[in-house]
Each structure stands twice: as structure tokens, then as C-alpha cells.
Length: 194
Image 1 (cartoon, rainbow, N blue to C red):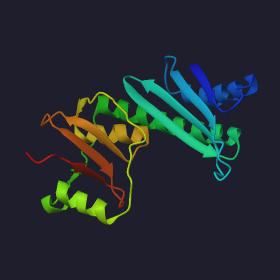
Image 2 (cartoon, one colour; image 1 turned 180 degrees about the horizontal axis):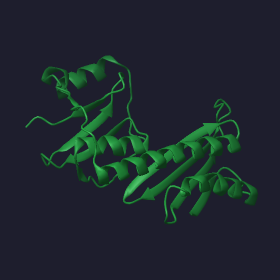
Image 3 (tube, rainbow, N blue to C red; image 1 turned 120 degrees about the vertical axis):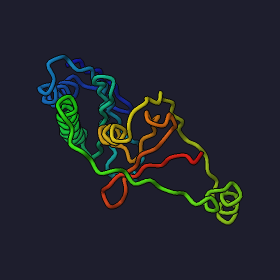
Image 4 (spheres, rainbow, N blue to C red; image 1 turned 120 degrees about the horizontal axis):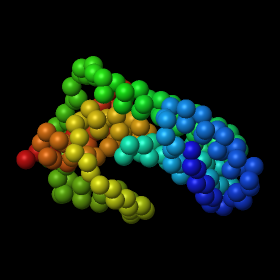
């Protein structure tokens, strides 16, 4: 396992790096080739944040990204939490990848969301923003390539990343779609109306 550790607002001691590497080494047992790991350890300087010490870990596996982030009041606790999370995600990825190569069980179809046109027009959004005294601004922008995949594969990628939604190109339709977690634990699919 090759681990690259960077720090933000923290002094990276050899003991801290070694502890992180040892904790992440448990996840290596699921793969026969060495994993490339990027880790970021950071401390928030804001005194109002109780869990101000964060450990973020990103691993690329066969073109997929496994990511975990955990915060606590102690960096060693954050490392323990993120190492456990990464190990679970890698085990889940390995199991699903192995099952996909064998035979995957049939899954229930995803729910398609129909957005009412009068609720999502530019005029309706402008009215809603005008009634509220909110000054929205984009604080972060992200670019990434959209890969063609099925909605079921997109759900698997979303779970591996630990995100609430995931954009992808639907391999069946060729259009950009989004899958998301519903409150009832199921998945939803948003498709553009053509």
C-alpha cells in the first residue's frame, strides 16, 4: 500500500503518519495488488466546531473512487473512524465486483421522479428567491468525467463514494441522469424530459 499523507493546519509527525498507514493497511487484505491512497488530515481553526479534526481518505480501485471522511475531537479517533469506513467500503466494493463477474441478482427497478413543470420554471425560482432574503453563492465547483453506466451501477458508485446523489450518463439512453438516496432507504432516478 502506498499512502501519501498531506496536512492542513496540523504538524504531521512520523508517529501520526505511521498510525494512519497501519490503520489503512487492514484494507489492503482485500486486494492482491498495492493500493494507491491519498490522505488529508486537517484541523479546523474555528473554536465553535466541536469535531474539528478531520481525516479524509481517497483510494482509486479499478477506475472507481473509494472515499471516506470522518471528524472528531481527536485526530487518532478520526483516523480510526475513517479507516473502519474505508475498510467497509472496500469490502463492499470487492464483494459487488466479484458478484458482478459471477452473476448479479435481479434488483427492483428504480423509482423515476416526475418534476412538475410549474414548480421548476425559472420564473418560479426567481419568485421564491425574491420572497426570501437569501444571497446564494457558489462556494465550490467540481468537474469530473461522466461515464456511461446503468442506473444500478451508478447506485453502486454512489454508495462507494458515500454521497447522497450521483450524476452519470445512462448507457441505455445516452442522457445525463442522477440517482439519489430517498428517505425511505431506496434509490431514486432523475431523468430529463425530452
